[in-house]
Amino acid sequence: MVTRNYKINSNRIAGMNYYYRNYSRDYMLKAIKNNGIQNIELWTCPQHYFVNNSGREDISTLKKSIQETGLKIICITPQQGNPNPFNLAARGENLIENTFYYFKNIIETAYELDVKYISINPGWDYYDEPISVAWNRSVNMCKRIAEYASDYRINFVVEALQPEESHIVSSISDLYKYLDNVGNSNVFINIDLGAMARNQETIEQYFHVFTDKIRHCHFVDGDPIGHLAWGDGVRNPGKDFEIFNEFNYKGYFSFEFAQSRYFRNPKLVEEKAMLNLKSYFL
Image (cartoon, rainbow, N blue to C red; front, side):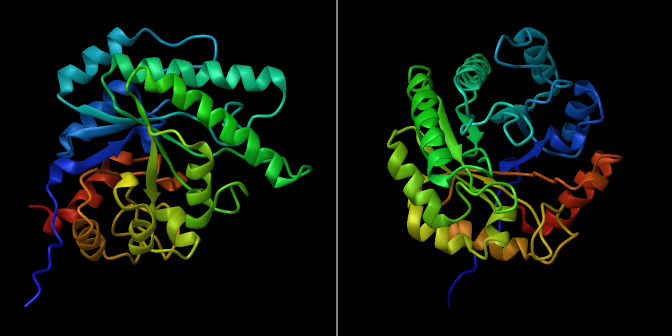
């Protein structure tokens, strides 16, 4: 008889401040803690932690708040999608240099917070240029920031985007080629279940291609696509956990609930998600 290992330790779940964007940092941290979550993936929105190309907020207040709640930041996700100016495929000398300094500040923030992973995506292309041109800009910037991050022993995890978001990397084959072109040893894979479902791919396919290069997961429900809170879609979390366990995945599972309807009462949305996953926790 085959034993089905469909459970994980709940201390591998991470909340995310993305859906707490309309609340203060202190409220967000306390709410995540009160929902029984021990970790957080920090999205660098200015109301929770401000950083741009020219500087960043003093880290001491954030550190104090994190220590007081007992949470652990397990990953930092910079703001990097269109129309945000700083993304790996930025075009034009001025914007390219400002993008590098933005990620430089992100890397130094991660180092001071003792965070080992930064989640990135390949950026977005201009529709009036060949995709290959945007691809080359993205690869070159990824190489550059990865080299800088290596001095701090910081790793990147790259996720594919949905084709409506960017044409640079939106599939497993794109990701494989992208990592090969970048070539830095501190660049790994983040499985985003929302983008994965949109691209009609599976967790098994990711592991067959990338094996132990997979270090992070944006763990979301879908119907069948969409960055939904658990219970709002049709995915089977037990089956998902079973596959991750089968391939010996040791990373975290972050809640990237991205629907705007969640922003009004994110604590309740997160609480319900945890209740829907409760039977799959050890």
